[in-house]
Image (tube, rainbow, N blue to C red; front, side, top):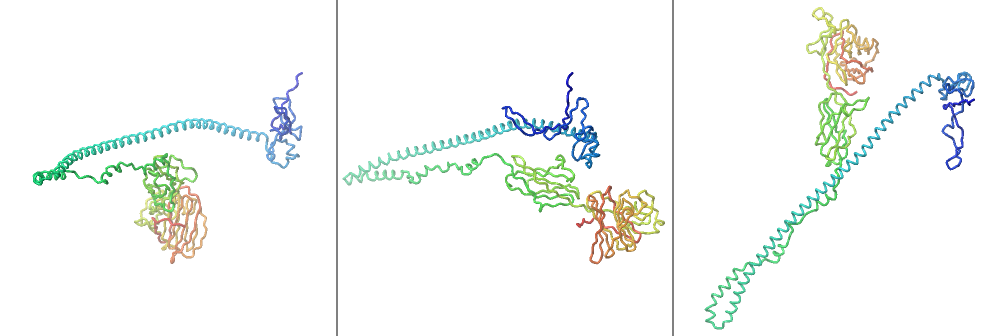
Length: 541
């Protein structure tokens, strides 16, 4: 009979402090990797591998204690030390941890694959570095060889000029020697002949020849060329105009080095400005002389994600430390970068400069196709007047976009992004609602009476904010003559600004929401008239 095979569950296997013998026979004592694991009762069936509870030996583990991070049995939860602990079914924990481990393994496999590719890239990069530096070394040697060749050629040419000048000067001196030697022979003969005549004691004989002799001597004197002074002779030895001035060249050769990149430019933020469709940029670079041109990159800013480099627009060959970028969208934030460029390449990008363009003036008129039949729209589309008998006098065509049950009208332009502002002259009316609404807002309801419109109301000198048919009473120090509407679409803010006379005092009230659709200016009036004033700059509040 063969001995049964014994299987031990590795999950709970623990080896206590052990002694291990090293290769040289010494005994080493210490905890092994499994020192903190616990022994469990071995099983004899290799197929089942049933894990039994260490506290309740007869119970199989069927739960997992989340608190202690260990498998337990039902008795452990009912009466054991895990009674107050959080437990989960073993199968659920098994599936969760197995799934998590599988995902982690898959992720690690992916990381390993990426690492293998990355190592291959690094090895390839090493080869490319070797090749590039070998090419660069050869290029440097070629440049220096070319430089030495130029120097050698110039040396030969200049030495040749020296030889030519030396030969010319020597020949000139030889010719001078020949001339003076011939002259000396003539004057010497004249002197000898005259000296013999001076020895004549007979007066008559002397006088007979003296005139001719004197003439010969005078002719010799007059024909003798003038002799150059010592200074003039020394000047002929000077070679100053053949000197070579290396005073500028030697330092340049001594500083000969590789081209270097200029320093990365920095934006002068206090000197940058924005208009509706353009941004003026100015920057500085510490070593201005080191750059050839500048390059500006820009893109719209997105708060939720990084800007993809492919969407950048690039302006190159900028020759100054300033430029104006045109063709931008109003009320839009852009991120700008600048870098310097020279023959050595381009610098890293500067830190990003975020600039928001100014909001374009929001202009609109009242849309007569949306106006209730009892509302009269002025010819310029800027005023609306309540006329209870107007519908009977005017033949107003029926349109699906027209308000039917309530005297309201929408503007003909929409707000879909940015910040926009307009004002309404309410000085002649004691009954109105002013605000914004989706173009899809119901035409049989007042603005502010649903979830698609917001309004401030004046009725019998009482004021309230309206939305979703709910009102909030507000107290004004005095009735307003104008009401300003400021919409910040991106932040979901609608601000109502009441302006009173005298002193033009302001009181501010706001709605905070998240706009799901484009907004139309919206108006309702049941007393007299309202006048819209649009195209105004956006205030800062």
